Amino acid sequence: MVYDESLVQLMSSLDSGVYFVDRKRRIFFWNKAAEFLTGYSGERVVGSSCSENILRHISAEGVELCVQGCPLAGTIIDGRVRRTEVYMHHRNGQRLPVTVWAAPLTDASGQTIGAIEMFTDQGDRGSLLRELEKLRHEALADPLTGLGNRRYLQIVMETRLESVEKGGEAFGLFMADIDHFKKVNDVHGHNIGDRVLTMVATTLGSAVRPLDAAVRWGGEEFILVCPKVPPKALGEIAERLRLLVEHCWLELEDTSLLRVTISLGATRARRGDTLENLVARADACLYRAKNSGRNRWVLDE
Image (cartoon, rainbow, N blue to C red; front, top):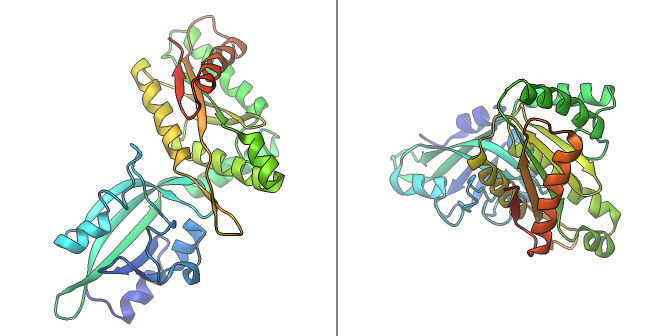
């Protein structure tokens, strides 16, 4: 692949985020779609490395790819095209699932001078926006975070619990709480607190499947309802949620980074359950996670 002006024009017109790096992984091109998908302007990122608190891709297992397994670094070394699914850091702090392609960037003589990364949002943004608009219209969405509210959870649970009663596969319910959130408000103020709530809510909502339900339960507590979750998957999902929030941060006006963690409790539905006793079991597990040191999860045995 040869770097020239026609290539730049083509990449500038794409809906996918695209950026070019040199052999030292310094960014020298950043298209408009990359600005839209990440929240970072070209002026902010050109000349810096993507690992400098910009994208900081991590895997579903929490591995920081800038440190271990960077697709751009591998492509610069061996010239191979790579595709991977990662969680990207957005300027607003949250983690978002994206599919990434890395390809070598060569000069006219065929020498590798860097690499190109293209990334695209894994979610159907148009469908998501339409659904959120519908929720707002029906007063089922939390106005701050955009997640469902308690009424939305009640509607979802009626359907899920009815299915379990009829012999359908059990679902998992996760309750998450932001650790030391009162301190965030006390130290940084409620505006920053609201940004933290939105960051965590967006990360949690992006970490689950389209048919799962993500709800703001109240304050700094969230509930996620995930159908067709076998017992062994509860811990895997809880750990993924914990890791993704742990790898989020907000960049404050003084350029310092504000990070938070969550604690989680999780349980599976069974016949005879109600919303109230399911939430009570998950809340008891959450309480145990908090008392065990926070930034961890506990399952209902």
